[in-house]
Image 1: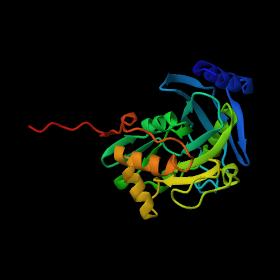
Image 2: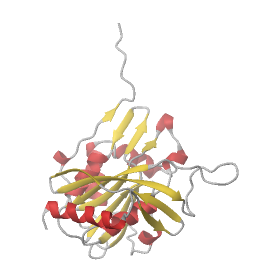
Image 3: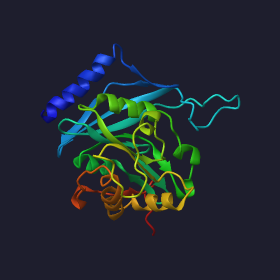
Image 4: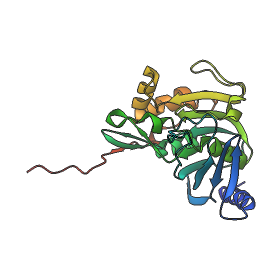
Length: 260
């Protein structure tokens, strides 16, 4: 299968599920409206697309803020970036809870990291929201689980060849179907035949030293190489990413003011 036929299959599957502008993706009590796909680009053996999820009903395990009467605060629509390697699966899948890290230094974009991982045969879906870190630390935003179950199931259902194994990056949240997979337990331990739940790389919360370290690592090229090749890809029996595939930039949120 060539790169264009894969894109056509993905678009056809979504279109067939959507009699109107949106179709419904369900996961227990979490219900989301998912838009059609928008093609972004194809290069280096990876197809990049985007879509939008809107949470209609939150899941039981959603820890997001509530109104005074106990109801969930209505969420805005969440954009998602999809990275699919060429060819036919089953694929190792990565679920990113956030696409960037916002700190006192500025904002670090994690999308190039997801693209590099896709070049090593890891498909991913990345939710377009920023981790609030350092002086801007916002625990509620960082553990936000809205649309994550829906997004994971959407990717699972739309990969040509299915899912072989799953890893979670960001705030550790994994939907129920992921927890049902056989799981590795030790750092560096591989899944059996590359199949199962490979665990997570947490970098969205400040509850433990590992999360602080991972947050620091994922904002540098050396750190991304370490996380990818010593853990994320290693446990899934996938080839390592190359340094030249990576581009890390932290952009200041406000332009610097020149001094007289």
